[in-house]
Length: 64
Image (cartoon, rainbow, N blue to C red):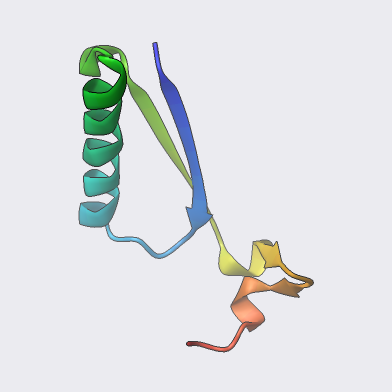
């Protein structure tokens, strides 16, 4: 039973999250021959003010 836990900053749409779940599941089926009915994927969304990288909160990073 594959279990994937994705942690990412909040902001993805429901459609984007649905695509992530579908494509990760498809990858496990294609690469490892896993049964999609037994594949579990959890998306943990973290607010940008609660995620730090390289010494700064993500919320404080300038937009690219």
